[in-house]
Length: 260
Length: 329
Image (cartoon, rainbow over all chains, first blue to last red; front, side, top):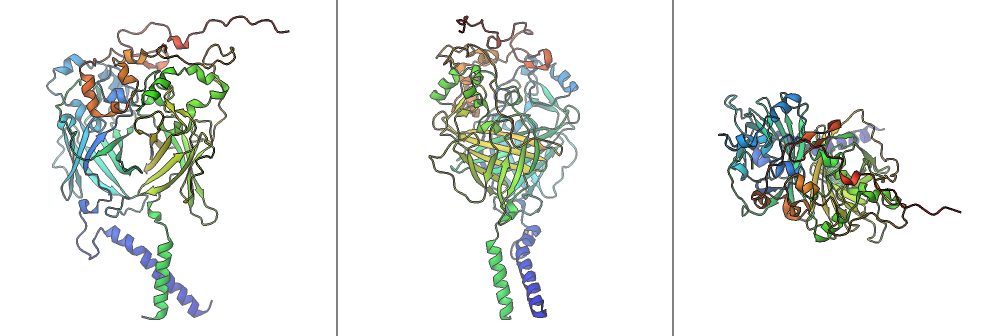
């Protein structure tokens, strides 16, 4: 190859590579076109999860819509210790127990027959509220860290946006990306109302995807991974889905109830 | 700026314009083990008879479901009906997902999902821009699916489906049905969500989801051995018999409902059953059933009251012998 053609080829490759890499570089830095400060998690959101959503209970109906029978533990990878505890569940005692919210902690709440109201509280915090038991989860982005290791019903949740594949870059409002939420510091509670326990060692990882159906419906496909080294033989991994509603007209707050 | 540089930049821009947004594609290929951590019974041994609770059946669908006899699959011509194209939404089986490359341009032409327990061809989701066949074309047990990447989600649209079931207890699916398939991957977990629409038997879309874990040593094949008739019971020696129940005569009509203190209105299915507000209808009448017990073999049975001692359900009973045939000459 003569020198001039070789130089042209190299030049073409260099220009093409620089142009092709340009958008990804911008995404990786999370900055605006003007090189301003990094985009906030709210501004960088590749998908819009805000609004009202309703759970569609098409899986595990009789374990989610109603309180199942004692000993009805199907589908949950419980260990022997967990079964021994759940065997002592007494609905009559639970009905009058002071804590009626044991089955309203995050690992159970996201599979509950509920509506969600999702809003940005600020640039770094996404709120997920439920009318079922009137619970509120604060999903923190960025460098947020819990003040300590105090246990709570909804625990401490930190999140980030995840790009498809391994590129690690998300583009605002591109539709290409997922919300990943990691939760810990959970107060012990029940995975199901019939007394299947989870411990304070439980961690929960969630993957939130936005699905746009051809008929205009929108759904959240939420993959939940509950890991409890104390009471589960392996992580309990279940998908659930929520359908978007136009407004909060069907929002119907209810109190916690241990047996309903 | 030299003309040469301008030409080079122009060529580079043209190159950019011709490229598809490959960033959105995720590798789905591999062997995937079904997790079955929701609806384990439905996915594994099969749903309880006459449990259509979560299926938005219309009146026609409920009637057809109530006429269903499991003995139907004893018939060679109906032996595959339980494992139709939508079986992936409720099957317990491992699957294999393969990437199908376009031999000309090197792009991905399709993602092909194995039969996963069904006696049918593989299920390719074609993403190369091809059209669906004519409406008059043949319907098969793997349908015809085209799709595209939508962000991190592979979405396929299936039509040309055959008549089948939406659950292995007789909930019907017509050959007019269509199914949207969404596939997502997060690390080692693959999730398949489907939305099934059927103008004949469903009042509303039926949405289900299940997850799989990558299995480096899995060996699910692309297809399975053919279906074979399962001898699930009686009187097929009488020519022309199609096992079924006439309206109001299904002996299993109330079994599931009674075992779980639910009304037939609930267990027969319907579009409103799956929403939180339906609990208000249940609250006045629902009582927590009696304890569950583990039967021999570890199978969990939830029967109200003390440990069950009754014999297996009637539908598994040995039928009376058929009438004697005249001697052959």
